[in-house]
Image (tube, rainbow, N blue to C red):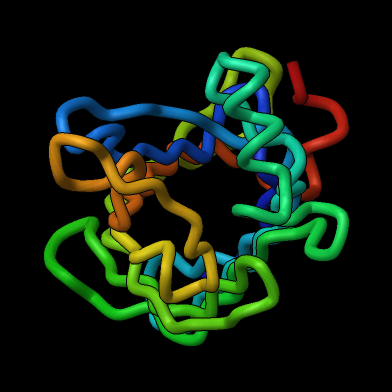
Length: 184
């Protein structure tokens, strides 16, 4: 096998995030709109590449007031920074069906290197004759590294919004040559 091009199946994929609220609970959200390209070489993963563009305004925590605040200049500032992007710079082996994908993440106009811990779940034929592959990925970032500084000190000590953001990604992708016929 050589490098194969895959299209993300957004119906069966997700980009999720979570952050501590008031230092005692975790708020979860996701981005509803994103696109990208995946070039994957199963036999030589170090040759693989991925690029993703996320519509920052598509953040969804299932609470409109919070989502509006996340879109505001206090956080993502979607008027000035409409996209969040990731572009891989290296795929590194990390065990059987596991990789570290190193890349440049840009949020709020700030680009920083991040490493995703990725698990490859394999490939298979779908009921429509197409070929699909699946991955899970995780990473953690400090939101302040990307200029997302807003916070509020709590009366009891601590802060309203945690600095560490956990990111979890589930990807199902369709082999590009078959993607138009097999999306459902």
